[in-house]
Image: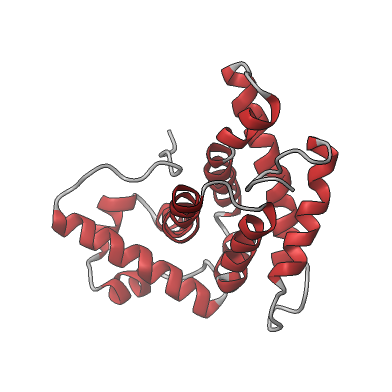
Length: 210
């Protein structure tokens, strides 16, 4: 049975939490620097200053660590900020919301590119779809009114999966890996799709009115 990587980890003692955080930070840094998920376990544990046993106790194996590190990065730097902004400002315009997402992926392009093409690509895609599918639940209900719970989940997953396909194309097959990406270009691409699903003048995914 695969762990649910879309949910934050349950409370643990402080030492264990520090070890988890150190390993996830080391994973993001080393994968980003090397542009590959083929990072030896020894390199990860040395960078985190923990033992190999700690990695296996906390995560089970290297690929689970890498995917959990990605999920943690999305939760901390993207979803949490989006939720805080929504609470402070109410519904924001769609372009700002999608642009924030695009900037996040552009800033961490080397990491996400490696994760989406490496040994844990399937688990990575599934985890990202789960995170964004859950985040889209509120928007789906605002768009389409009262829905059966399963329909709402499936529709959120549908939107997240389609968005993810466009983002993957932008990250992986777009500009040369050494060239900077243009987040505004991705935001415009995604928002051009919104009227197809929502009808003009209605709320677009990831934000407020289009």
